[in-house]
Length: 74
Image 1: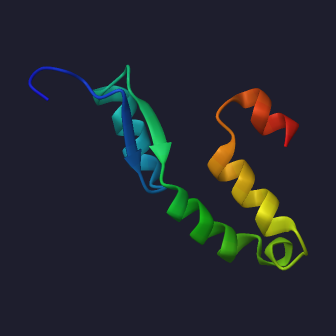
Image 2 (image 1 turned 60 degrees about the vertical axis):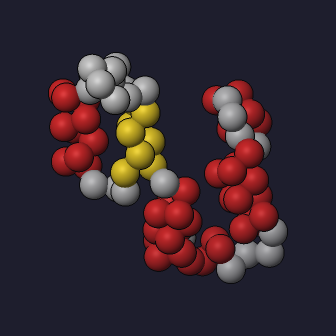
């Protein structure tokens, strides 16, 4: 990267890493991998994922909402 700072840094959901990213790369945005979010949803909201239609809506929100307004509308 030769003297350039990253715009985004993608990690799993380790909060200590997110805190360090803010210090080391203050202009970068911390992002989470969709795979980790999906895996954690299976563990923590299992009852919802069993509901008819939930998974389709959840995946649409996770994969296709590009703005805050789109996310809130979904």
